[in-house]
Image 1: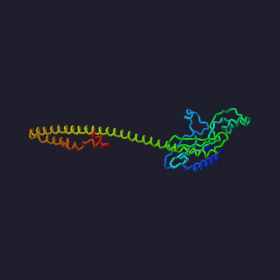
Image 2: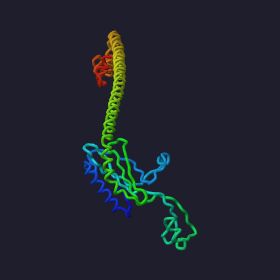
Image 3: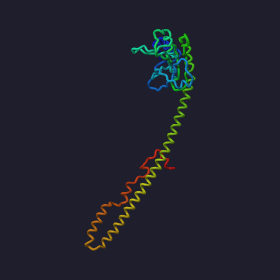
Image 4: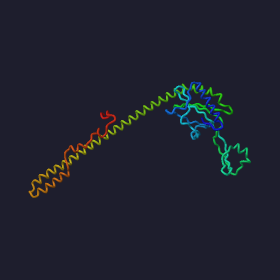
Length: 295
């Protein structure tokens, strides 16, 4: 409920009577429970809302509750708002001096020209509370259903509260159908999302399988090449050893020492030492969808 100080007491009375009428019609009126997410509605508090294009650029400064007041008809939640409307008012800025500058209504200015005559004044139009109330009912479950009733002229809305409660109650079957359809559409979108996500995961899975296969193949090729290079060195050292054996005795000992140093420097040539470092594709990446390996 939103109202200015001038009519807050009357607005409270209207809200109280409306809640009683709704409960008489079978509703349970409460502040919406905090354990569920509720949908709100952008309410235009202006008494005469502008066309769609102007409304698109209009941003209300009204306070909005974190949890709405809700009338529960069984499991159907209908949010209820009672608010004071606004109307455009021509205002005039007057400078009183000594920090008393400010806006007053143009009607007040014209009625007191002597008091407010200033050298520097200007006018502007702002939306101000008009003293008339509007009741807005809308679905709190995310479907686009809403209805509003408002006061006109000097006629108050009190006499219409019984009828308003009955109209809200009568809309419940329509809202139920809309909510069920919205849930059905939401489930369809959810299933479509899950299917799209699985397709994405399968594509990513195939990409990573192909990448792991490529990495494994390249690594195995490197292992084979490393072993082949080392074996070539080993054959060279073996041939060198035979050549050293043919040297004279006095030259053979120092060359054998150098051959020993060369072998120690090169290390082992056992192929297993190289093969231990290789990883198969499944060791690099474990597929999320093993059946992808069969295709």
